[in-house]
Amino acid sequence: MNKSEEENAFSADEAFDEILKKLESIPWLKEYAEQLPADLIMKILHFFGSKYEIKQLNDCIVRFKIKGSHCEYYFAEPLAGVRIIIGNLNGLETLNTFGNLDNQIRNSVIHYCVKGRCEILTRDGMYAFMQPGVLCVESQKHKDKNFNFYGEDYIGVEISFDLDRIGEDTALLLKQLGLDIEEMTQRYEANADYYIGTVSEKLKYSEENVMQLMKNESTDSISLLIGIADIWDKVRTGHVTTNETQFYLTKGQRKIVKEIYESITADPSIDVTVEGLSRKYKLSAVSLNKYFGIMYGSTVHKFIQEYRMEKAAELLTTSDRSVAEIALMVGYENQGKFGNVFKRKYGMTPLEYRRLGG
Image 1 (cartoon, rainbow, N blue to C red):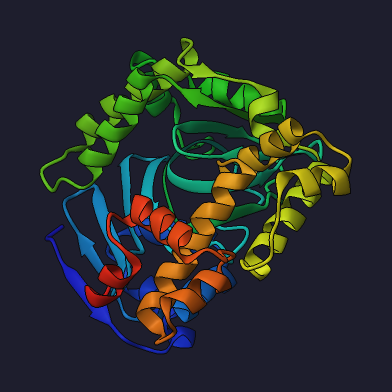
Image 2: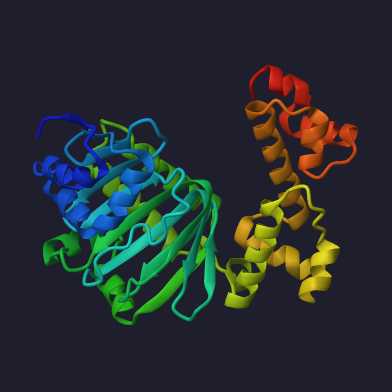
């Protein structure tokens, strides 16, 4: 198949059908697109606008990009039933259930977080949190999962094995590479819950290697399969460290963290302290920071400071308010202290930041 690049700017309501038409010459990718909920695709197109680009980089890799954004995906099917997806879900934290496939499809999936944060509702009602360097193996029959994304960027790698499309010959070839489809099927039939942990530096390198291969027009199917086999071998041989207290929150703990987050972001001028929160929720400062860190990757104090500085930077470039006014708006009565904290973060004073336009 020759390389081709297709562009269009239909309305979002028309774009999904148009995308499927453009994928007629790439059957495996069309099949994947049809497995995604149409309303999800519509949300993405409505969110960014319907200008998109589909480019076939080579015989096994296709790039899909929403033009004018950082939202882009690379898809590959190096072998029937084996798929790799890497992408940037820039700005999609409000679109839940991203990536859910048809409930009838039997998949074993490896998810790896490169950037951003993602929340997963587990089968036992707990909430697990992905962050950079965390890997998740999914082998569930029921995909009524709920993935929520935190922050403006989420970049991830997904490797999926369609257990029904992988035939005996393919399974034998994969087994020779160390990928045991029978073992994956047994885990799926057991309806195993998510397996989540932090990867070693060696496994991180393996994931990054596959990402680079996916963006290289000269990459072939064999190279991708070897890359996948390397990742799976490390997953199976102790390169993932699991710790339930590091990744999981109960429904009640999550509710507390969400309330704290909302109180901080609702009005950054309000003085929110860990001591006050500890009294309110009858929890120690250590527990509060631990729960908050699991969900947002930061202590409460550090998050407040970061959020205030980001809000200040935004106000400096989008308003004509004085530095003193902005300092008060983000919780600093002392303009000098505000200026010092701002300079530590951005390497320049607030006035310099405004003059340079950020």
